[in-house]
Length: 169
Image (cartoon, rainbow, N blue to C red; front, side, top):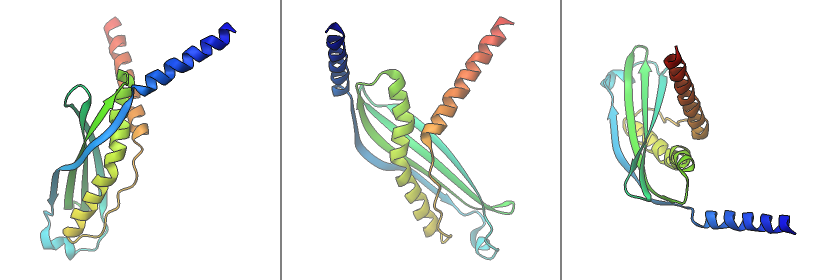
């Protein structure tokens, strides 16, 4: 009987904790867009065998107690041989209301869930601007933000462990 009561109390506590959790998208917007075609018309006279390089960045800005601005930056550089045919960069941002999460959960949501929401908009903006530059469509591959976050956490842990090892020597 006591075990049943403990299970009920634990379930009630979990339900109460979840009731205080909130995640809402307040606004999605393009914060910055840049497009450069340094080769100019010469890019259209060469055989199109591009080398594509994609870089991702994520920045979090706490606006107040419950609101966060998350900015996903995608930079795509396309080269023909050694010369840059074009460079496109998009800063896709969103304002998210998040409450009821502990620090670890909050960090995870801000670095995985929010960029996952922003990515399709950034990918569309990149494709759109590349098309307006008269280059072939560029569909960026999906990104696993959970894997990138896990990798970053692992690197931080390794660096912390190496730092502690260096201090003991």
